[in-house]
Image (cartoon, rainbow, N blue to C red; front, side, top):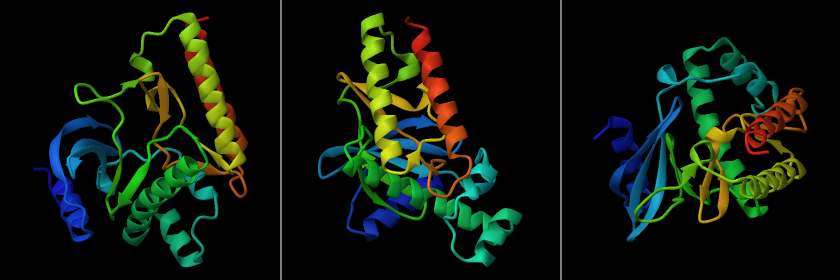
Length: 218
């Protein structure tokens, strides 16, 4: 078993969450996702890669928001010192969990977050026993179906914005589709509109990415 996965499962066990690995699901630039079982119910376990092996994107935009109160920690993060890298790694995970919970509670179409550790997030599994949800990129939709999905995405973008959040990396690669519903994922790079000067630029890019996907079906 991968050492990061093993560490995550051990940390959840200490919290009273006894996970059993079912199988690997996906592997991306920043994390690997596994299907796990807890009390005979499937969940998705997102295990983040170590900082040195991860492809952090747009760090300057991400750090522009005032998410770190202590100047010394913020300075360490900007300099990419050993401490700074560890702080970014932890903040990345904590923020994604926090944002998922905030948006789920606000009625957005995101997986329900369950719990987190220092290097992983346990969340709702999207799909059925035989097959996980498809990425929007892989979905073969007709014109009418694409229009419905497009409206749902815009509705979610509006919910995000009303809650002070811009996804920041929204595209057909991080939207799941299952049983007629969409689920938007991957929030660690989301922008806080209250204090991130790049929020409007990121929102514009998000909308352009979704428009580009929709234009394929018009």
